[in-house]
Length: 254
Image (cartoon, rainbow, N blue to C red; front, side, top):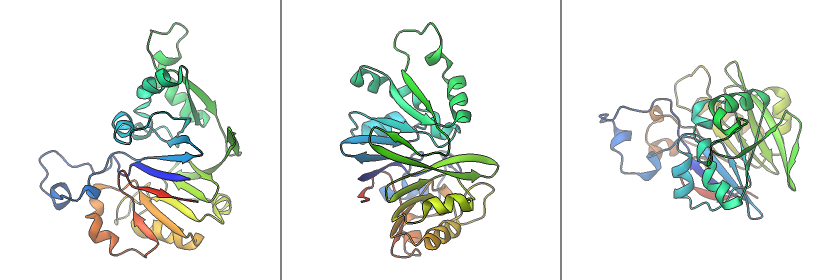
């Protein structure tokens, strides 16, 4: 199973255009981050997690020719704002793209993209086949997906586990029942917004603590805010098996 980070950043703390801080001036490509999204390639099938406003460019940059399905973690715009651009995949597939998410996020998608679900559709609107999920595991073809409920302050968010891999973004609390579902995970992606405390996101130290508690073999931190600092400097502070993710990073997780 191949994991590709389509985006490892966040809308939180995006600097103004005129910002002259060290992160903005950095020439390290690892400091240039689009909104958080990832893709798993499993037996030739591409499963994308979240489709934010940068979705179109992320697909072009990664040269993605087709996607089997999209998993949505929650309804915030930085995670669903690019769904209109599934149109290109509709053309490739000659049909709708399957999207899996909970009922609340589905309702947000229906509201934001009402033109895609109206009775009389304008020609060329995105074709999306919505599948409502709950905490119960489900299949995408022969791919077994285990939802991992987490909390984004007071908002429930879905993480996902596939085999020995787990993905959690936009969280600052993992219930004990979800920690049980994560036991045995060898590879993990988890959000770490910044070093300072935040109302609804794990800090760097908190994310590292979760990884250490689960005894994960290797982990990557994502949804990284501008305030985190330079990748090279922060990476030097981390245990050897925990890494800051960066856009276009691709790794094997099996």
